[in-house]
Image (cartoon, rainbow, N blue to C red):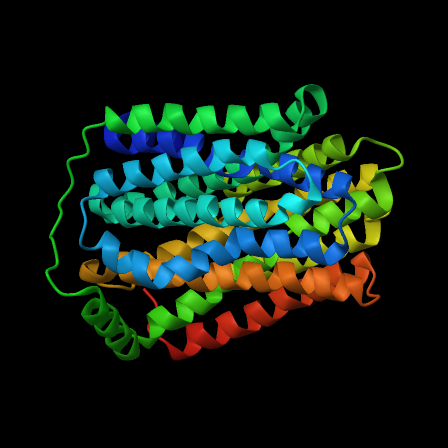
Length: 398
C-alpha cells in the first residue's frame, strides 16, 4: 500500500489522471445496475440480459482496430475530452428508455457509451509508459487496475442502492453528472507528455502493426494470455443468479449491488496482498487460484450469504492477473506501437468478455444450471494457466 501512496505523491500527473480515471470509470459502470434492473422489471428472457452484457464489451471490440491508430496520431488530452463528452450525451439519454419497446435505443446508447469508455481506457493505458519510469510501471498498472476494478464493481454496487432508494432515472442523471465532473478536471489538467504525430494513414498504420506482431510473437501470445481475464465478465451471470435464487429474499437492485460490492473487496485487496509476491513464474498460480475460486462460487451459489463470501474470493485474483499481464505486454512492445498494440490487446480482451457473456446466456437458455456454467468458466482458467506455462518456456518474455 505504501508503494501506491508514494507513487501518487511523487507523480502529480499520474495522481490527477488517477482521480479522473476513478470518476470516469465509475461513471462508465454506474448505470449498469439501473439497466439490468430495468430489464428484469421488463421481464425479458435470459438471452436479452446476456445480449445486453455482450453489447457492453462488443462496443470496444468494434472500435479497437481503429482506435489505436487514432491514438498514435492525435494529442491525448483532446481525444480524451471528446470521449468523455460522448459519454455525457449517451448516459443522459438513457432516461428516455422506459419500456420494452425502447430496447433498440438502450442497445444503441450502451454501445456508444461503452465504445467511448473503452477508447478512453486504451488512450490512458498508452500514457502510462510515457509518464512513468519502467520500475514504477507495474505498481502504476496495479493501481490502475485496482481503480478500474473498484469503479467496475463498486460503481454497480452503489448504483444498486441508488436505484433501490431513488429510482432508475435518478441513477442515470447522477451518472451523467459524474462525467461532467471528470470533463472539468481533465480540461484543467496540464498534460505535458511526449507526442510524436505519425503521418501515415490509418490503414497503413494498421498494416504496419500487424507486421510488427508477426515479428514479435511473444507480444501476440501475451495478448492472448491477457484475454483469459475476459472470462471474469460476470455481469450476465450475476443478474441471472439474482433472478433465479435471490429475488425472493431481497430486492433485485440490492442483491446486484451487494454481490458486486463483495467482489470489489477481493479486487482491491488482492494486489495489495500478493502484488509484491507475483513474478513471471508464479503467475500460473494466479490462474489456478482464479479457477478454484470460481468452483467455490459454483458450490455455494444457491445460498445468498455464502455466495457473497465466494464473491470476495472470485475477485481476489482477478486484479493481479489483469495488471501483471498488461505490464508484460507494455514491457515487450516498442514505444512506437503502444497505441495500436494496446488497442488490439483490449479488442481481444473485450472479445473474450463478450463471448463469455454470450455463452452464459446461451448455456442458461439451453438448460445448463448456473453452477455448471460457473464450473466451466473455472476450467477456462486452467487452460489459460497451461497455455501460459507453454508460452513462458517457448518465448523470450521480459
